[in-house]
Length: 94
Image (cartoon, rainbow, N blue to C red; front, side, top):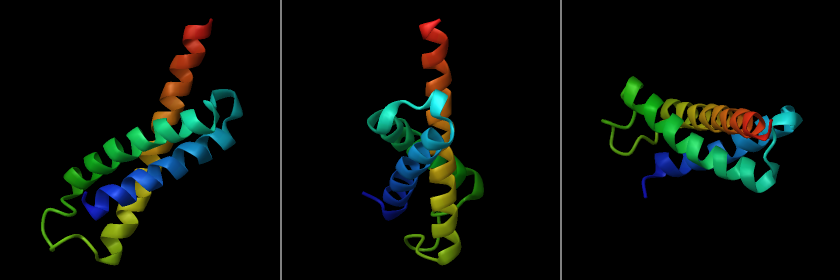
């Protein structure tokens, strides 16, 4: 598994749980927030990485700028995915 993907997945989990803590009415519980964050971190991180061209060159993407971008994109992707799933869950309960 690629190091950048691992960073994005972990950041996604943290982002999903942070969004769940901030928006309690959308929270899916710790496990739900973590799973949504994991998926969102992976997807969001890969999309940002493709758009910015990070990791395509540079031999592994271990420079500090790439790592910070991977953490930020994974965290934001995880938070956004948790919010989207939380909104869908709320709409289905009505």
